[in-house]
Structures are given as C-alpha cells and as structure tokens.
Image (cartoon, rainbow, N blue to C red; front, side, top):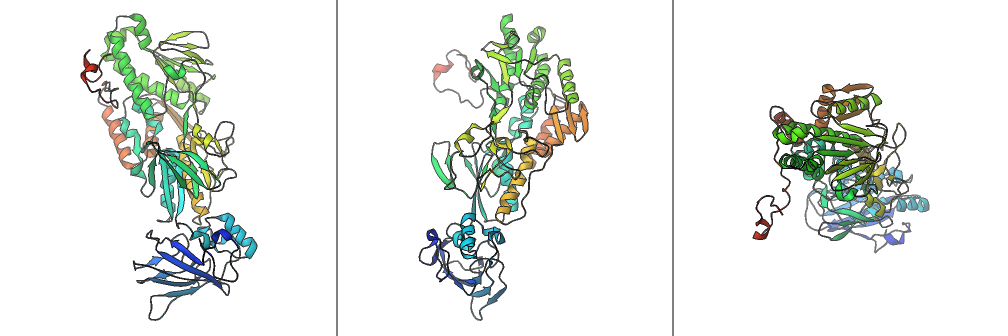
Length: 582
C-alpha cells in the first residue's frame, strides 16, 4: 500500500498507508526495498534504500522504462535517489563522490495512454487522470509484485502457442506466465489418424510442454472457477487441491470435446476420436478384432468383429476411417480365415455430402476414392441406436458390429459454463477481432473455445490452422496492453486445407489451386511436418515415415500397456500373463 507525502496527492484511499511504498520487488525478485514518494513542483521525487545485494538494479523494473516513475539506478551501492515523471528522465546525473543518481522529468498530464507500459489497473489510472490531471501509475504498480500475472487455461494448440509467443515478446521478469493444463504435453491432432494406423509412434504425435515453453510455469490441473471482480481463478489439481490464483490477464483456451447426442447406447458402446488414448485404443481394437475373427468358428460373431462403423464425415471422420481401413487391409494378409470372410467399413453422414470444409469437387473425389476401396458411404443418414453388437441407422437397417467410432464434430469445452464469461448459443466465448472477451478487460479467448470472427464472414472453424494463427495475435495484444508493440486484429483467411485418405492418397487446396492423389498427400505431410512443434518431433516423424516405407505394418496388440498387471495368483488361475482370460 502507498500514499504520497505531498499536499497534492491521489485521493484514492485504498492506496494510502504511511507515505511509504512497501515491498518493492526488484529485478532479482527480492522484496527488501522501500521508497518514499512526493510531488515537488510538478515532478515526482522518490528516494529509497534497500538492504543487501549491491550491484546494478533498475528499481522501477523493466516494464516501467528508464526513469519512468520513481528512482533510477543503484550502481554498486544500496541507495536510490531519483526524480522521475512518467516518461524517460530528461537528465541523469550522479552525485559527486557518491553512489546516488538524480534525474528529472516533467509530469505527464495527457492520459493513461501516455505510459501504457505500467498500466496495470486502468480504472484507477483513469480516475486519477479525471480528478487530478496527472497520472501516478507507479503508485499502484508498487503495491504488488512488479511482474504482470498472466494465466493461460489450456495447453493445446492455442494455449501452448500463446505461451510461446508471450515468452518471445515480453521482456524477462516483466510477467509471470502460468500455463494450466491437465497433461504435460500438447497433442498434434492432425497426426492422430496416423498414430491409430501405426504409421507414427504415438509418443511422436505429442510434444512435452516443458520442451517448448521455457519461462512459463506449467501447472497440471484445470481452471474450474473464475471471479472477474477480484480477477482471480481457482486452480484444481489432480490431487483434488484447490488454489486461488490472481491474474492481470486471463487467456481461455480449454479447447473442445466430442459433440454428443442423446442416442441410445452411444456413451456405453461407442468410442470417440479426439485424444491419443482414442487412437491407441482403436489400433489395438482393430488388431484384436482381426485376431478373434480369424480364430472363431461362429460366422455371426465374425461378421460383427469385421464390421467397422464410423459416424461423421468431416475431417477427423474421413481421415480416421481412411487410415484405419488402409491399415486393416494391409494387415489382412496375416489373417487368412478373416480374409476369406471379408471386412465391411461403413461411413454414416447426416448431411448430403462429406467434407463441408472443402470444395465439392474435392469432396466428390474423396468419396470416389473411398468407395473404390470398398467403403460403404451412407449420406443423408443418421444413427438411431447402438448396442454392444449392432448399430441401427435411420433407414431402419441394423448393422452387426462391435466397433462404432463417433466423429460427428466437436463442441466447446463445457467447463466454460463455470467461468463467468459471456457465451454464445453454441457455448463459445464471445470475443472481438482482437480476441478480447466482450465486456471483460484483461480476459481473452481463442481456439475451439472462442467465437472468433472470421474475416471472410461468420466464425472461424475449430481447426488447428486457425488456432496457431490466433495465438500470436493474442500474445501481441496482451503485450500491447502493457506498452510493448502494437495491437493487432485477427485477419487470417484460411487458404490451405488437406485431408489424408490413407497411404499416398489425399485431397487438398492452397488458395485457388486444388490437389488430389499423391501430390496432395506429399504436400499434406510436408505441411504437417512443418507445423508440429519442436525440432525433435519433426525429425522423429520423418524417421517414422521413412521406416514405414520398406517394412510391413506392425501387428503387435499392446492394449494392456497402461494397465498394470494384477498382483496375486487369483487373476492368473485361468492362464495368461499379459492379458489373462477372465
């Protein structure tokens, strides 16, 4: 807390306490200084001292600018003396025979915008301007730690890239960055189909967050409550412990979850395709179904095991279906009895076309390619019911299957409902073209969770390429709000789109140019390889792709990985060691 020892001082009662600014935090993070401030003939005069630690220190901190506030430098001593306004000091002189400096600068009477670098509490600053005609931003700035508190909720494409860009644009020690995520990695979702098909090692489609952020503090947990008035959020970790975290800027990037519809049996008998665990499960499940189909003598059971139903004809649905079907077709040579029976792959899409995100001609090519591989595509059809052994569609047909993959789109993360932010009808956070949340200064949102205006009209689709381009805009706007750089607006017009259709096949467009077949497949891989964060992950992806060319698919079913073996003899009495039979 602080007050000015002066006849003309800020009439802000919450900021007064004894004419001393307590607990100044210097560039080394110490809180062992105090400063006295007064206004003298249109200038602010500050003097102070600190205990211990000589050497060069900027009392005002990197965000305040040289001489912009109170005090200048302490050179190899323990004392400060400085006169400073809100801009750079006009003079800076060292007292002869001492380690003290003096300087002077006029008081800036324009507005808070004159010194945005220290505008931590704009409402207080604006009140000071209106009532007194001058700004003393250093008052409030020194009542708390000098670094800005920036909390980022979500470590996916959007959140992780915001943290990376903030580390680049903000000076060191000027901000405390906290990245809150439920896992310690970010997932490159375009590679999920290849992880499911075994083309890429699953660990190579994720990047450890600690490899790509260096100054941000990674906190494992979730943000599950928000107090806009006090500018705090509640962090809950995996141990169930809660912590109240203050913020100056809050970035909401929790992403999305699979869209869910109230279809009988969907939650019990279907699997999504949104996370790495889904991809690993599906790969092992397909291998296991081939093994069981090759062993059973029951034709009905074999029919169920070798029928795979995918619901949803967007990006993720088509890519997952194409990659897994390609994988299973290659694997079939090792399962002669299953090969004689044959597989059945079915795509159910409610609309009258697939891939609404790309041109009709490319969507038609994708349909022809998949149907040419024997995939049954049902457009204008919906799913009515799912059981453990069948799927009923809107035509009345009952499809015998033990595998139903739900890829019917995504919705914003439901946790947004508890965060006291304005949401649109779809559950997305309402933001403007600068990615600021409507009516909430200091709160921002991006990615799948935000209703970001698309420069071409409507809202941006929930794709990775939009999220990674929103991140630097948001980081630049946070930096601009603290006086570093200029504000930006999001004006990206998506000009590229690729959809993989299995090995050597894809469709895509770049601008007005359209590609299909092998050229599109090669361009898609090149593009995705360039976008996955981390040099080591780029190299590992290329190595995986190269190694898969001359070798056949790996058919090891490792579904037991991640589930520890049971202790005690009871679970093994019927036989088996890695996956005992119940």
